[in-house]
Image (tube, rainbow, N blue to C red; front, side):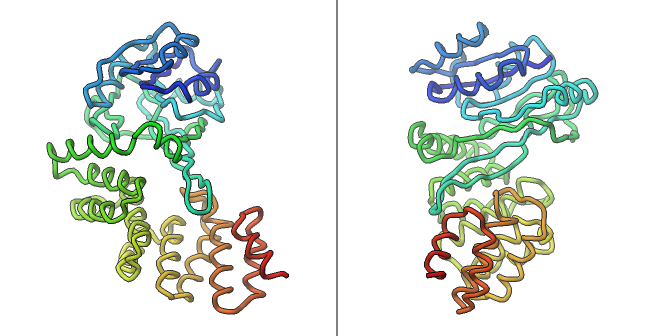
Amino acid sequence: MISLCMIVKDEEHSLKQCLVRLKGKVEEVIIVDTGSIDRTKELALEFTDKVYDFEWCNDFSKARNFAISKASFDWILVLDADEEVVDFDKKKVEEFTTSNEEVVGRIKRINIFEDSHGDKRHIERVNRLFNKNFYYYSGSIHEQVTSIKGKVYETSEIDIMAEHNGYSREVINRTSKLERNISMLITAINDNNKDPYLFYQLGKSYFMSKDYLKACEQFVLSLGLQTDFNLEYVIDLVNSYGYALLNSERYSEAMGIKKYEKLYGHMVDFQFLLGNVYMNNGEFTDAVESFTKCLKLKEGSIEGIDSYLSNYNLGVIFECCGKIKEAINFYKKCGKYAPANVRLNILEK
């Protein structure tokens, strides 16, 4: 038996679709509203009578834990209104909950965001299914599942996949999400300026708002406080720092990312970043080597970096070097990727 616990505010544009997708998948729905002024509560009541008000206090964990306190069942699934479940293997999820009492389940989340080439899909695993007898939330923003006993816990990937549109330009503009997050993170850092995770999250918020210089500043502060480079978020921290440097046109400085290759060189995300760093510094031989490695590695956090995106970059490099035949060959491997097809239409005329 699973209780779905959600906290919401002004989510009338996405809540109904989110809940429709979960019909028959969970046994209970708990909705905690933190101050909506639109039709959010009205829509929530179409799916459950367990809709509660919570006075917002700039603390996501307190709101999450309040929602959990209202749950009738031990197992809690946490989702946000802008996350739409597209796959849920109920049988396998039930098997997980009956045999993994203290293990935290990690759903697959696909973040949809926009860049200069259109929509991109960033793939990650996040801790979202757990037994409330062993876990609660901590942290005022970018809250984390935390062991009640204060111990390191085991996680496992589970058969739930959700698409997250909270990072799309339309949603960000509508909700002022980034401004809110930045303000809350600055307050949290003022209370605790020794937590590298807070600086990382502040850097990510600046990155999403395209303020790459400020993002770099926060990433540097986070890296300076790190003691464990094997933590999952630190891998993303290094990659995000590299892209922030590239996006702020600090190409030569970005070459410093190479020092992390001994730690992350086996990972496709890092190799793709490194390829871009080399390419922007005119080091085409090294760039080709990195992108070629990407094609041999497992799926990364960004859809296509192990396939069409690396092939496209290889095509660009060979085209720039005047090797048109080789460029066409790589562009043809990109499938329906629009930028590659644009180059093919030009080169094959």
